Amino acid sequence: MISPINEWWIVGGFAALTVLVVIAARLFAASPEPAILYGNGLRDDAPGLRAWQRGESVQWVGGAPVERQLHGCTFLVLSDWSVPDAEIDHPRTMVNCEFIVKY
Image 1 (tube, one colour):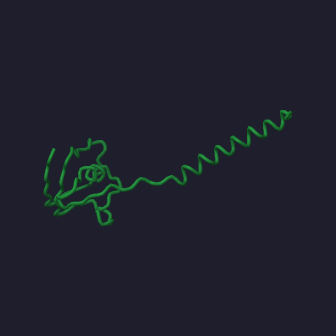
Image 2 (cartoon, one colour):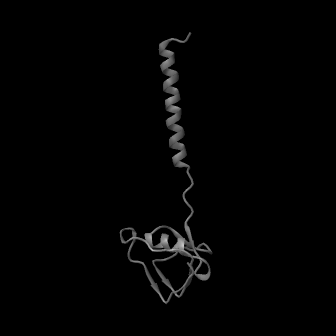
Image 3 (cartoon, one colour):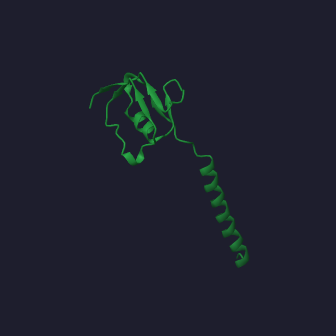
């Protein structure tokens, strides 16, 4: 039979181990992949445009980060990409961009 003092050490040890596992899981959790913008009119850009408007991390298909101003791109849009005003991170602008809308 285990004495009550030893039982508390076992319970405390399991609790401490649980806390350490949770902390480690949060520290080593993979960060979400950034959204991708293609800008060539051939692949769907709607998810990337939504993320871009919200101010989230967005990359061009080649890996370069997307700046706050988009210039001269052609976007294929296969779904609604509008974002409520409260979620928009300004200033984001588009200059001379074309949209191919298919939804």
